[in-house]
Image (tube, rainbow, N blue to C red):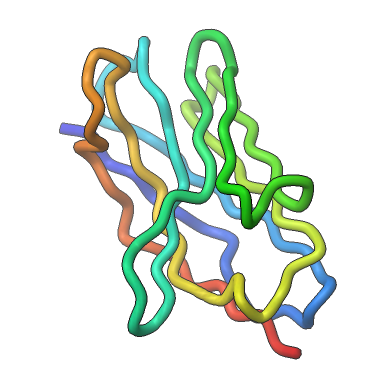
Length: 119
């Protein structure tokens, strides 16, 4: 079984930065992608960013392009989300997720970490 544990959330003022981490454990990992999603109160969960394990290909939601970066440490099975120039509308619970590259759906999810951005 796969376990994902996020950390790094918190409260920050608008314009500030935070870095989220997500550590994966439970099996040998290869050929997977890890993504970040977020859900604000009263809103649907939305995609934020993703990175593939082997090639390091990345993708981002338009709302975070140019402000967020995603990276991975394959040796540690950890993915990071660096969030800069944070805005109040970035306030949400952030979840990391993992999918195998032969699947379209993310099958494994972390417990979430709260990010709050004050104006």
